[in-house]
Image (tube, rainbow, N blue to C red):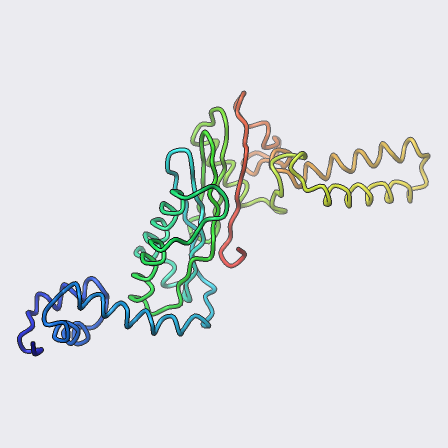
Length: 268
């Protein structure tokens, strides 16, 4: 079939599906003898090959997306080369789709499935940018809350047991995103043993260096550890919405945060 015999309507349809120029779409349809599906597949394969050769280009922009599906939730990071693309609604929608697909998988590190790769390639081919799935986390829980900053570059997800109202859940996630230093564990029991041991040793040395008697030095070290846990644990930190309270003070009775994830574009 020649390009002269290709319907303008078919060319426009293929252009809408691929985001490519009219002439490229018309030529692809001619090569496929007017078969729309075949023309689209060939175009995507051809362009995917070209895009795969561009993965060395820096992809420092992107967005965070979150999805909740039943007893699981996922938070993911998707990278792009330019802020223009990262802010594009089609890019954001694709990232949300990837989060939903990730949430269907097992808890733990989000797996980049074939279906996710295919969905990402649709936007990667249209934009011509080095777009990639940078990773994510899937949580299990009785309930979830999440927050993604308005620029899409920072977000947080919590899993909890019991009942936490929507505003409180969002507020705690906003705290996780905004806190400095960021929390490293829900409470002191979740702080890695090596981190505890190192800080404990430092606290004891600092107390001894003060020249105080052993008993007083030990109490000083204990006080330093309590202060340390307040600074680095989610429940111990001062709440960003009301610094007269700790995060633990805004949790409803009977509620318990079991896991949290904080993500920032470019830091995953």
